[in-house]
Each structure stands twice: as C-alpha cells, then as structure tokens.
Image 1 (spheres, helix red, strand yellow):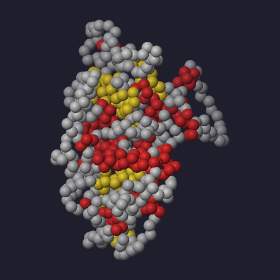
Image 2 (cartoon, one colour):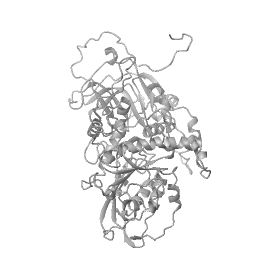
Image 3 (cartoon, one colour):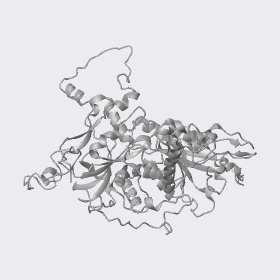
Length: 606
C-alpha cells in the first residue's frame, strides 16, 4: 500500500497516448518523408532532450540588437583567458546542460536516413569536453545536444535505405558525427552509413517476480576457442554470452569502432608469421602496450589483441586502481603489518586485476601514462606496438623511445618463462644471449593514437592532419650499438616499479651482459585514427566498422565494460532526467564516471 503522506517521486516518463485516430492525408504523396509521431501515438507533441543552456540569456538579449562594425586600435591586446572561470571554481558552477522538453519530434525523414527511437546513449570523456567547448564562448553553443553513440529501434526508414542496412522495427546501433552529436534525445534522424543492425539485446524478465532458477553457464572445463593463448584466458562469465544488454550495446559504437580501427593498424606487427599460441617459444610473441586499457576503447582493444595471441600490457591510472580517500595512508610504507586502508586499496586493485586478466592482459602498470612510459624506457623494456588513448606530443615522444628499445636488451623477452610476479625477481634468472644477437635485423614497431597531439582540440584542424601526415611518412630508426655492464646500478624508477602500489609486475631489472651487442634496427610507424574520420585508411566507413564490431559481439569475442556496482566514481548507468550531472567538470577534467577515460550509459527509455 502506498503511503499518501509521502511526497510524489519526480522523474521522467516516456508514456505516450494517441492524440486522435490516425487518418491518412490524401494531399501528401507516398514517399515524401513526412511523418507525425504524435498523431501515431509513438511520441508526445514535444520530446525530451538534454541541451546546453548556459548563456541562453545572453543569446536572448543580443538577438534584438544589431552589431555595428567598429574599428579600434590597441597597443596591447587583452588576453583571451580574461573573464574565464578559474580552474579551482569550475566544480562549483551549475551544470551547463539541462533536461528539457520543448523540441518537437522529427517530422521529416530524408530518403537516405533512418528515424530512430533512442533507448540508451553511451558517453565518454570526449562528450563532456565537447559540452565544455560549446560553453566557453558564451551563447555560441546554446541548444547543443551532446551524445554520439546510440542503441534504439528504427521507426521509419527512407526509400534509399535497403533491407540489408535495417528494416522498420529492428534494433540498430549508430554513431553520430562528432561535429554535430545530438544523441541525448528521444528521437533522432541518422544517415544510413552511420547505423547498422544491432545484435539482439539481452531480454529482460517479463514477469513481476522472475524465477530464481540460474541460467546455464558454460563450464570452464569445456573446450572453447576463446582460450587459444596461454596469457589470454578469457573469462567465460564475462565474454561467453553473445547477447549483450542494452547498456552494453549503447557503448559498442563509441568504444568498439575506434578500437577496431586502431587494431587494424597493427597488421604489420601482428603478421601471419606470428607463432601459434601453443608454441613453447613465448619470446617470439608480439607485445603491445595499451594506455588506459581498463575502460573505453582501450578495454575492447585489449580483448581484440588477446584474441589474436598478443601479449598485452595495460596502463591504468592511479584513480582506477586505488581509493582516493586513502592516498595519505599509501605514503606510510615503512610501517610493518597490513592496515585497513591497505586492505581496501588491495581489494579494489584485486578486482581490477581479475577483470583485466580475464580480458587477456599479461601485465598491469599502475600510474600516469607519461610516468609509466618513462619508467619502461629507463628500464629497457621493449614493445612492438603502443596504442595511445590519451593523446599529447609528450606521449608520442615517450612512446617512441620505448618502441626504439632493442628487444635483445630486454631480459623478459630472452626467457621462455612467463612474466615474474612481485614475489619473484627476474634478476634471479640468468637469461642467455641469443646466438643471432650480433646480427642486425629489421623489425617494425607501431604507434597508434586515437587522440592526436592536442587532446584539447577534439575536432582536428587541417594543420593537425598535415602534421600527422608528415609524421606518418617519416621513419624513425634506432642506430648505433648498446652495451650493458655486468653489474648495472638500479635506477630510482626501477625501485618505484617494484612497489605493488605502482606496478603489479614487481621489480624490473636490466639485462646482465658484459659484451657489446649491436642494437636491432627498428622503424616506428605512426598512425592517427581520428574520431572525426568517416572512412578509415582501408576504406571502411562507419557502417562497415560497426558491422565488424557487431560480428565480434555475436561470436562472443568482446564485451564492453559497464561496471560491476563497485565504482567509486558514481553509477555508470544513469536515468535520462539525471544525465546532466554526468557532464560536471573541475579544473582537471570530468568528475564522476567519465574521469580518466571512463564511460557511462544514459537510459532514455526506462
């Protein structure tokens, strides 16, 4: 029985009722693209949206007055940053977006477009940055609707949309243009080259009291094609089921498309000549480092690499591996005995480690991206490829040093044993020098970035593309010879990596050798997979890439990460009317689930 004294709960409801009986208009011809969703009972007269409202008053005041062209001469120009809110006060400002219901639903569907009823929207840090960019110049971005990745049903299709694309009433996934966005709405119109038929979502229980009977889970003892690599023991509970939930499918375009395009750029590194996973020589495996591989596109890229028999190393930020409230207790490492704060931190890191190991990760490096790259370069670690999901010139320069490192100088690549644990030090084993180490061989390394040199400019300019093109044509090679002393001194970075709070690999050691060995000649290829590109370097458009990702989902190869209920940054699945809080930022970036490369899902249809 409901208590009448309690206040009514406020929330968004998508309940619709037909306004009147539907009658065909004889004046409108067939195929004109006009549609009335309110008269059909599918939508109300106005649909709910999330829009940028900061600066709307300024827009109203300035709309009636015409600006005159004036000429002035100033010796000293005012700074562009003058008048901006200080960074330490950004988190105190109201959220720049608001949940509204004033726009009418679409009434026209072009011949090459699809009218979609949005069920859920996937968001990442780029969507938050686009909202901030629209609010920097005042009223310039008023009315902007964020969001790019959707899962929904096709309500109406144009005449030019063939049946192999989608049909009316089918589930579809889509990715909007980064320059336009507009996914946080009940209904949107999308171009046919940006949508693809979605896998069947996981059905919800239709009864009020669902049965407590457990569904059948594939036994771990049964053979599966997922376990083809000794370091890629994919967890059956995480990836075995081909049916994804609506929340997982909402993240598939925004995470799977860039991950798929990025993995394709490593074709020269992951060649068909790579030995089979059942081979005993593990030193010949390809080793790739993924920055921010715990979430977002990096998480799906890790799963794709593991399926191809690649030894994957993952860089994870500090905020994703430890509790922020216990940072003060982390510095007290001299006191013996476990503490309560340490147990909380280890519990969170253990959950993260279990999840990443299930995806196929061989090693986990905790720390900021630039810090981890510098430590790996100082300790002589060698990689065949780096997938950058962070961006910046510093990341490229530090990553190039790591890729140019000679594989013959990396002790972990000279042994057939797996990676050492924190309890065992690799210095205990004496790696043997290969008989072909004195021969100069030509190898290829790959650096692929999803962000580019300027993370603060999500939509790249022509100058950015020109700089990236010149860098892609230039071949960076390592020259000269390197020598290692028999008793090298341990660098401070190696001591930092030996701490369990910094790295789960334990102590890093350098190679012990007294002979001078010529370094391998390596070339580093640079590729920028831009989010604004409609077609990748091999000619695949957005629809083709979405189709490839959907096929991976149907085969049980990948699964987006939507959280496990233990996220300290807040819920990762939020209702439509509460979604504006996701776009809150401070001086360092997004606050909440979008922090440090995180993602979240907005449920438009409850």
